[in-house]
Image 1 (cartoon, rainbow, N blue to C red):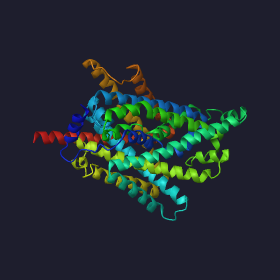
Image 2: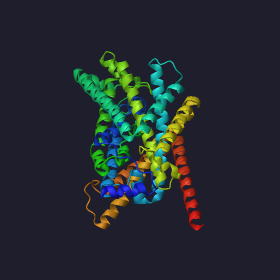
Image 3: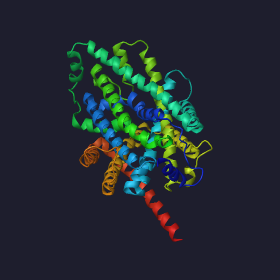
Image 4: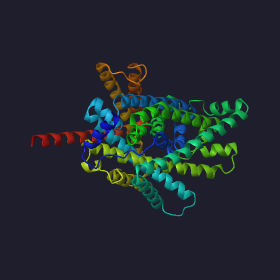
Length: 463
């Protein structure tokens, strides 16, 4: 049943729009890791720790649980009605076409800024490693290289991302093991002193933890990439469900344990925001050559996230084009069945975001880019509400679900309430109000685009 539904969805936009089904289950699983584990963890963890102190590990835990539950919701919808595409289409199925339009464009916006940020991070790291070239030139080469991998074929992208992810996962697992061994070798009072003697476990209070939420969620984004990549595998619904069961939970473990090792070994107020906290931890442990090794691992992580970012932006444009939410040419694919136009546009938009970061005032760009963290909360809110609406329809139809969200509807409502609560709290924190306002304006721009699309549709129908 899955195959015909996929064909119908693909064929709706006309010939030459079907995506390839060249990804194996191992690709889908590791692509989810690839989208999550990037500079947001290897570098961004220092910013999160600076905002919340040692207690930020609780924010990582809560955010990881939220993402795990969102993935569970996606898995339920994908298995109940397979072959629809990404989470964008499941949102549209439950709430109406407006939800697909809004989530698709907001998600594309998020990943364009991610591509720009990863390009800048990669260029700076490679320049610092000894490559004597302008940052913009290094960034351009990185973007072109990852664009070429995406244009080659979806399998080439998947294979490259698989090995990128293997390196990252192995590095984090080794870091946790080495860190745990070092902590166990210390006197029992030493870790407690590091955690408690620098202003306490929650040195910046509750506000500090709330402020850290967008930063943490931004860094942990990517589990839902499995719902996009799975559409180009032989068994989309099965692979989405598999990712829902395992990937988000593994990511939660990796993030929480990594950050816990960091705040136990080094005092939180000795870390420099914007610099990798992993390197000073390994230096404290006394691992020879750790700085050079970590630099290479972080560069790999950046390239991986850049690779995934270009993939996701192109698939979002392809899906939006297929349903009339973007220009129709974006739904087209090349001879190798990859969305060439979407990949090239994602490449250009991402590189422009990187150029903006190099040439705009740093605080201006940071403010614009940080809206992405709040926008993800909007997207998760729509996904959660879509699951509630769709589950009620399944119940009305008497459909027996093979994979379901636990404790429905109470846990689903708890997810909605938790996301809404965080957004309300952010509105009362002065340093977050500007970012939240820009996020709201971005949402309004997308809604204005939706209104324009509906008006054009009405005019076309009446003529």
